[in-house]
Image (cartoon, rainbow, N blue to C red; front, side):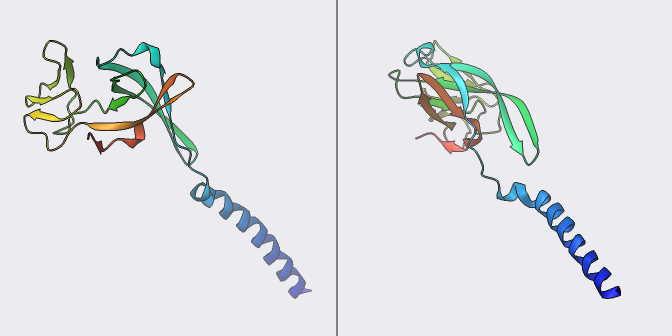
Length: 153
């Protein structure tokens, strides 16, 4: 009788323990989905005129979804191909702006200057502006903000 009780108890423990363990480790095996954010119709962007677009970025971490405000500088040379720059200077992460009269991105913190393609013109930045991945789906521009860190060509 003691052996039967011990066996049944072990079986119950294995079923409950296995289910609980599976619940806690299942996010590690979940398929990660690429997060693409819709920035609007491709018709909203004028050729060779950078436009700053604000958006909400959502990142899922296990069971929690975290939302944060983000932005990107978007540029198109022809209305078909798009570049989305991370809005932080590659020197110390300060926000920069587009100066239409000079046709350059200017960072006020340490006088960094970038050309329209994101290349360093002057100042201390160690590399060109970082880019986000972009794609066009159904006439809408999509950006993947988690892809930051790619240097401009």
